[in-house]
Image 1 (cartoon, protein in one colour):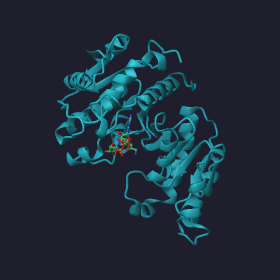
Image 2: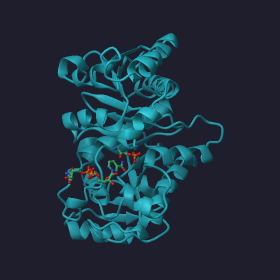
Image 3: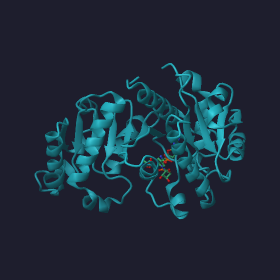
Length: 345
Ligand SMILES: NC(=O)C1=CN([C@@H]2O[C@H](COP(=O)(O)OP(=O)(O)OC[C@H]3O[C@@H](n4cnc5c(N)ncnc54)[C@H](O)[C@@H]3O)[C@@H](O)[C@H]2O)C=CC1
Ligand SMILES: NCC(=O)COP(=O)(O)O
């Protein structure tokens, strides 16, 4: 893809300072030419970024900039835009004291898109438990971004839906960061239909898949085996699939999920709608952990993220694989370009 020189850069929030976020962003910058990445800047505490890269032995120069000058610096240095608040360089040891700056980085990225200073948001992983300890009231980025978007784009549809997009498999969990025991209670016909509609609309609008085939996974073993192994597939999932079909959406199912992800089955659909997190995140991460991207559908702006988490166990050593961050930056760049031109690239 040829970068549009007039396009605003991508805004990247640094995520959990105790994790690998700053490292994989810097390593992605080092691959900018070979990966054909659009210009981006990192939202973080610059002192923290400098300390972490030095500690990790990552020889990437940084330039502290404003968003407006990031693209001009991008060829020579990793542009860093300072956020309010300090971040500590404590690899593997999250501290709630960093939470305010971590959240500020995410909020600032969205504000920059709203103001036209950035073209899309890319987020490095957050340590959810650490933010919860500091009072963060959202399960993760996905829901938080929905709330921030509703504030910045009043009246616009803001119903965030998580999709894991990989080279061979893309999946969407209908319920996300909830305990397994709560899934049956939270799974409603209406929510499955709402998610299916957003997926169909955004795959067409943002990914150029005009009439996407949506395979819907059942909740229970063997999709309930005619109601003998749980009634949710008969009473909730099946009727939701019927509703989606009635809306003209190419949905099918519910399918037993144990046979939905093998190579031959994957040729039969564009995306799987699953009923809970692990049902659909395990297969995508198993097939392509290093290339899969977490993309939020249903928002008035583009947001992508690597599929992995904070990897506290390897932070500070410069050994993390930046491939998923590279893929997230590349996808955000393509999606932002689609938004500008109306044509998938
Ligand atoms: N978008 C986000 O903000 C996400 C945040 N998380 C959060 O991350 C934290 C840790 O989650 P975990 O389940 O432990 O998953 P994780 O992905 O952080 O780590 C799982 C294993 O994969 C390895 N790993 C992860 N990314 C790697 C990379 N780029 N290169 C090499 N090895 C890598 C780690 O070292 C670890 O052994 C949790 O707080 C979780 O909520 C998890 C996924 C996404
Ligand atoms: N398991 C996916 C994940 O944790 C990403 O969540 P989010 O922070 O992107 O909402």
